Image 1 (cartoon, one colour):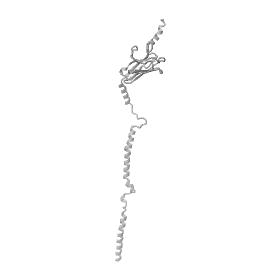
Image 2 (tube, rainbow, N blue to C red):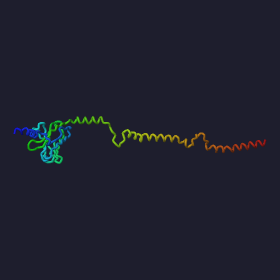
Image 3 (cartoon, one colour):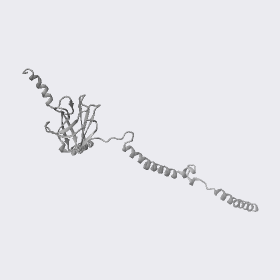
Image 4 (cartoon, rainbow, N blue to C red):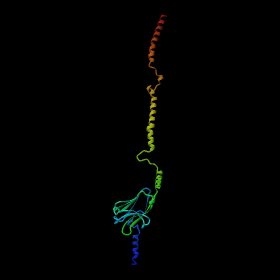
Length: 226
């Protein structure tokens, strides 16, 4: 009997100490104030129909039960904490909603059974909302603005608007002014108007010719009489 006692001590030690390999999960998780946090714990085959639970407190023997399943896959919610078992995946999720800074503590996810329960220790830390917000703002400050894909940059759009509404009408106005100023020069064939003979000058010259002929006749007659 005395020789068998040392061999039984390791087995008893595994039964009493929680956190055996039958249940596994994260050692530490972090959440943000006023948000939600989900912790997933897994278990070995054969524990599908066992009751799963989530308790709070560093001491395994005196941790405060927060919520537990009913031995089925139905979700159970108690206050801001809910738990749901998944037999096919052999895991159960614990969700803590509307996190508070006071929720930071040591928790356990475990399986209820005859004898010592099985459990896994999880350290939960809740960060203030201001730290998360300031980190997001700092990341946005040092991020260079990028134009959306498929859209022209802002500078190109402004230049296009100036071209359509300001430069094009101005050029058309200048072109119209130049054409209006040069219109008389093209109608006169490119020659100054002052060098052209008025159309009525030929008529006046013809009206003066009979008087000149009469003077010539009278001057001829006078010369003959002498």
